[in-house]
Length: 222
Length: 137
Image (cartoon, rainbow over all chains, first blue to last red; front, side):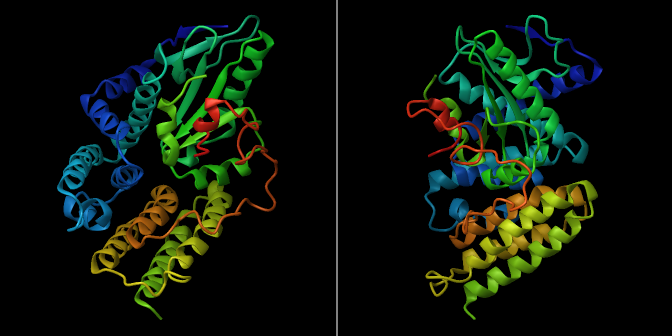
């Protein structure tokens, strides 16, 4: 088993431009140190219709309420402003930005406990045709590789994603390598579990990391 | 009816309307139905139970109504699906409830038993960091 950079088609080149936008790094950096409530704020704002910050401040009194500490309010305000920048990119662009944010957040959290962390990589196995889609994030540490697919919402969990992850795990096992495979979803764990419960694709060897527990990516090791 | 129950009822009505919009995506009808089946009781529960009689601050009521106003603006069913999983948690933060209660909402007729202690992945070893990765915190 070995990792390889994915060949870039035209769509990947365009997406790479979004991934490299400093706004993506800024939002991901803020989310990496955010509380769960702040992450719900981010998800709501980047899903939202309105771009008036006062509306969002009213909607999250635990972050912006009159009795909330100034430091908490200030930190949430910085995150709110950054998320509104994403929302203001327009309907077409924002979905790409949101996906790129989840990938960048995942990579940043994983980098807190493992290296090297890479992006857009394929995994090759002896005698097995290469997968079409690269993995969003990989940890390529010797003897303890990991691959991650990242989604903004639970709706992104589908049979293709689950099959690719499970195939990779199974192919690695054939080579006696314990490849950890996981899907990271910036959405409610409950929604993800409902989605998975209806899936007929095999996923009993795949881990789920949902919004509420995303900090766990940066903790421990294998 | 307490103020809290009234707010929860408004949220429930708004959520039903959102689900009605979302289920116009035919391919996602089952997922939308599962979400509504899971979250509607949770939203309803925020207005009843031991905390139902507790004082609802003006900030909390305004927050919930702001969230209700936000989802009322949605006309795109795809965006409605995104909000079906987001809205209950936003309202829970506002009202101090729990969008994951009551639990036990795995679809009864789901096609595959996904196994594992939280319904996803193999039973973790006790010392496995992937137990943490799976969110068992």
